[in-house]
Length: 423
Image (cartoon, rainbow, N blue to C red; front, side, top):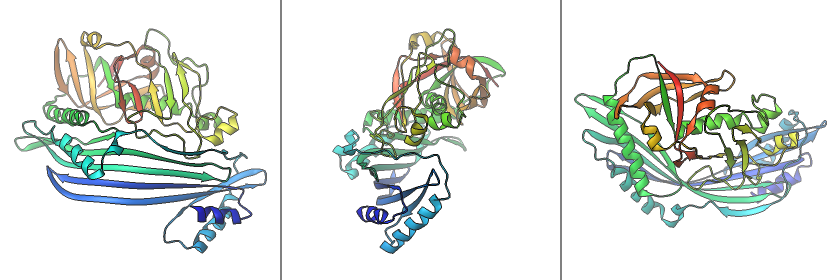
């Protein structure tokens, strides 16, 4: 990196630069059923250079990757080419973020183990859930990551952070007679908790068994629908993306500060974007520009109160420097399990993907597996779709008082939507 920066400083046409390096160390296990087939360890580094050129009252930029096979002359040639390309880009002028040095590590208990030991413990936790009659885990892949992310720029930023995270990919299968049903599970985490891993895989084993037995209900019908954390995160992502500085600058955002997103009797949304959530692999001290991440409240009691985004667009809008935040935190609601048990409702377990369209006021999706709760009984159902007006959902939704962490989301583990059309 020091050599690259030296070459950048030698180029008189470059107005500024940013050099980003990601060192990724992995330890990987590949199982077929319970038999370990392959063990793999990797150690790779990717380096990317962005060159900035102020010209004709504008700012241009261009990027290129640096490989170990490149000679010094190769790097210098790529810098010159990037300068020429940057002159063809006419962005409004802005200064790169300045100053700041940091060496940090994202908090995680995974750094307490050697990779080989930790991977074996994770495998044991996965297979502890493989105990359902007629069920099996056809394939399991375990990936451990240690990532070192570094950034330097021409205005004094020099930051490095280390993070640990893991991914389990599994194929739970249920076989009855000559027919089998499979589900795909991708479980990400940054804290090693064997009980939680076993519970997660056990839930998927139960789901795949019930999917084999699920039936299609008579439709159309109007129902209370409960979303789980993954789908709640998708909904919050759509709402937050609309409030990004880039969307505000391009005037493509639907909502603006002081807009009321909710009216009526409901649990009010209180949504913040934050730099770190314990247990989330998206946690970070700074973004890809090296800007320190600052927690920002976007929605307060159902009213838009803030925006967020990258340095460039914050500069254009003269808004606070938040950094490009990735983690979401939603405050808990008032819905209790006892209250929910008294209602007839359909709990979505597996969707093809939640569909949210702010501009057409729509929320819906294809439900591959759900639990229908009614009159004290629970039955698995499949082969249905749901749809509703997003504004109606926001005005009547209830959020659970129980919270969870799921990837980059922390907040209620359930969201109740009322009077949703099911087909």
